[in-house]
Length: 599
Ligand SMILES: Cc1cc2nc3c(=O)[nH]c(=O)nc-3n(C[C@H](O)[C@H](O)[C@H](O)COP(=O)(O)OP(=O)(O)OC[C@H]3O[C@@H](n4cnc5c(N)ncnc54)[C@H](O)[C@@H]3O)c2cc1C
Ligand code: SF4
Image (cartoon, rainbow, N blue to C red; front, side, top):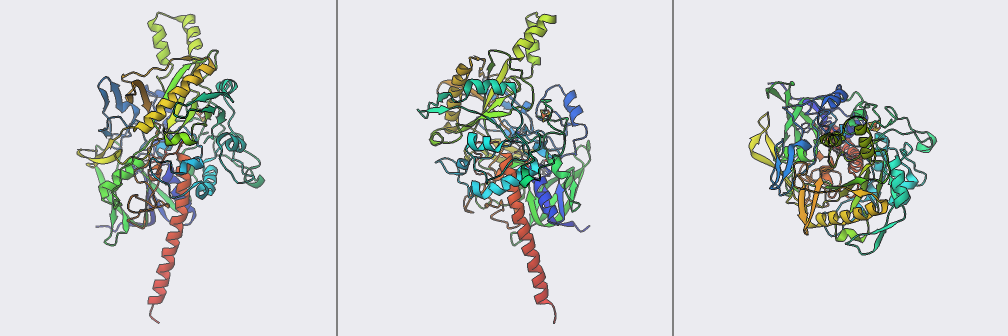
């Protein structure tokens, strides 16, 4: 039997959080091994995307039957509810509708790249869900560190005034804010400083179209870093509008950019699926076992083991929980796998009065932020509104659908081109991302029957929306109705129990349908007490002092912003703690050796 290889740190998952932690610890001189379940996967991503018929977040991935990724096409709606036929088994009354990617770089290879900070209010407790053990001020320096690593383009004054975010004096983002699209300008012209009412609030809320921070390259800000400026990696965003799932310019941040900055102390092994985290009799974890495979090997693999002083699980909220459950670890509180959250997204869509030219630039460059905070969140879930630049693609599908409809009406030739331009050129959508509170009943468990290609249990998801969330959706729809009226837009929103709407439900007699935003969270949430949370404020397991669980799974609430910037800030903060712990352990060892040395 061979002795397992030994590292200072093993990181499970070469995605967003894992790549950041590996870089920080590698820079500290630690020997880090990153084990990634997926293939390398990036070489032919653009070609794969272009040649795939259905354009979904996973369509730049080559199919990997051994390590499949959940896809939006796994779900279908209908009059009797929904069906789920993919990698995830679903038992909830409603579906968990978000994909995640199991490939080197993880979900962050296909993400949209919107990186707003959480609002200070998001860290507070509002009578529902769970409490954060830290606040905005604790995270603020790490937000700045994450904005540097990712390369964020935004305008600090706009974020201060339009969102109410505090920044240190003199701070500017690495790059200037991305220019607004023409659609953004048209909406701002019609909506800024106008008021709408929220049925759960009574009083009016003022509207303002505000730029959304972007993880994609814009002109660098010379004032950044005390006048030293910023040098972006990759080209400048050129407006291809294919960012989700792939940016052919390399303008969008993906974790592979961080991987390219890893020092030589970091080693990556792809096609390495971790299936067990080992522990000793004192409760410390000792390393991991993983399955090493070749593509197309029909499940044949070899099992290898590595040992390490510290183990970091960064395999995504669902897979971290699965791995903990498979290993029987970290569950003193009984909360592992529970509190699964997402931002259920209510979409509304319509036609502007005059052409606004969608499909220029990223999926969303601005939003409306006024429903994120204030007293309303005690009664109904808060939300942020994304202004969608990509027509009706998320709501109903790409413009091919419009072509089919016109062809079915016998419209051909120049008439077809004219009618298509007239229709697609006026399409727009609003995306209401609703905060979902932690609910222990929404959870990941292990499938007792169905196994993956390696014989390991697959995840089972039980998911539902509370009335608090549904009230948030009802408020969002009422706000949308008023926005459409202010715009003089034709509203084409319709929710039906049909294949494209697995998230269909009725609330107070009104139909709704939601999509998943891809923001899986909460399955190993942090808290102030080992009795009711899985990790502490450093994302360290309460039960195993050298086991860290990073990613959105640690977040006790998702707040009202897209979560990855906060997740990245938390990861960088935790990496500092890991570094301190490793150094303290080394000092202890050296002292022990000296004290015990023969005189
Ligand atoms: C379509 C889409 C759009 C999104 N857009 C945005 C956005 O605009 N803004 C935002 O803030 N967030 C967005 N997100 C969310 C964002 O992508 C996630 O929050 C983030 O990627 C999570 O990072 P992670 O490191 O926890 O997981 P991932 O990035 O998913 O990485 C996990 C990694 O672990 C690997 N892995 C899994 N299991 C194992 C195992 N057993 N052994 C070894 N390796 C394993 C996986 O292959 C993967 O590489 C989006 C998500 C999706 C799907
Ligand atoms: S709009 Fe185009 S260039 Fe810009 S990030 Fe998206 S795909 Fe890349």
